[in-house]
Picture 1 (cartoon, rainbow, N blue to C red):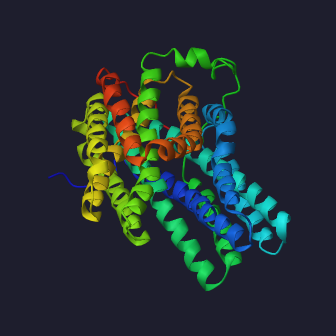
Picture 2: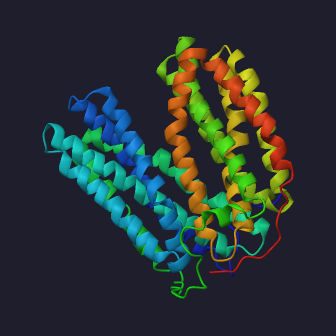
Length: 404
């Protein structure tokens, strides 16, 4: 069996490790604030709708800033966007820290600004990291390994950030939690010092003109990949929405529902560790098509899972299918993107996911209240299964990518 290792990049895997750790630092800060800010709002006596507003603001600004960020990364490379990302994330944590001692609406207003800034910072960091990581790969297999490793950073941050914030909030208060979240992103600047700098490309031929999104979407295979990505991202959202509803209907405890969702997250992490071992044998189109069919099958039987064990097994299998998708889609998108517009393509994907993450839970909530969570599983499964044929025609690209 092949050994698990970081891919060698120009004889030095430290470049990839620096990218991973820098993104981990920024995303952990955002995840910590995202957990703490709603709790602080509720503790201060704000209504439950305020939590929904705060969580929506974490994805609202990324929708507006994604495309400018993509163009910035194409023009200036990694370091300038990272500096902006760190500045926004630190500002978000600092605003939340200032809000601790403020009353009423002043506090909530600062928390809203904090949520928007932290969400935008993490998104900018993610776009810059994925674009620079893709430039380190020399072929499709190398890129798939790289994007699989890069996908570990947000997954780990989603666990580390809330846990660290929760421990500090319980032990020392919200102020100390926000203080730690404000310091963490600064580590990304130190880690980035070892990464080569790209020369800014100010000439008109080096970067595509602004506003030519229709031309970008005309690239063969791009719209197909984006549609597949949306279907699978929506599948992730419907699972996150429906499992608590199903668990509550079956009178499962909160900890049991949490363990079901934890089984899903653990499976996602495991498959992203395994992909680098098998990247040289993976056909991206076949993997995406298989993941969609498996997702459709699991959604078909999920509502019939009556016990926690059955729901946990279903969640783990779904996590294996959906966990392999993100690095595979990003690798395929990178392969089909026009030269000089890789950051823009990755940014468009990020914007589409942010819109979906904002709109789809509202649609699922309305549909679930009218039809029931089981029907939402079946409808989403039918859509994903029907769309699996779109992924079958995707071929793995062997075209080399320029190194950083």
